[in-house]
Length: 131
Image 1: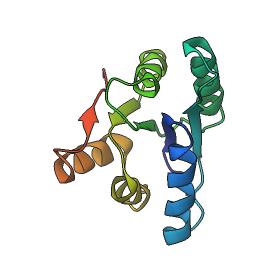
Image 2: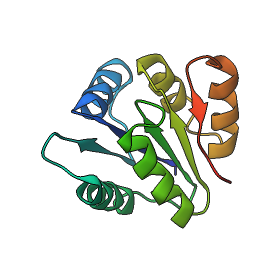
Image 3: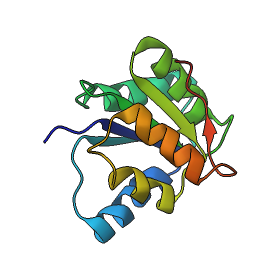
Image 4: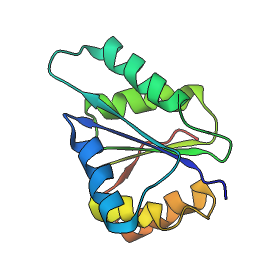
């Protein structure tokens, strides 16, 4: 079964650790990557790291990019990637319940899952997609 891609981006290692926690709960996930902004990284380094992570995904069925803080560097980097790639959505403000909800609905189409989680978590998530 093919599933849409998920790219997680955060300050520090929050994205990587959230993925580990989610997999502990629901099992290993395929077609997922992450990138982290670390103290010694500038914007260009972060963009490069994020683009490499995005390129590792099968984007055939779309990609949802989840970032930690609205307006933070990972969100801004996600918008750069989204502008260059069709069928890519950016949601900012993710937490473990949101990540689990997305993982548990990967048999659906990416844009439907985006709509669903926005309805479920209206005060938590910001949709930064430019589609």
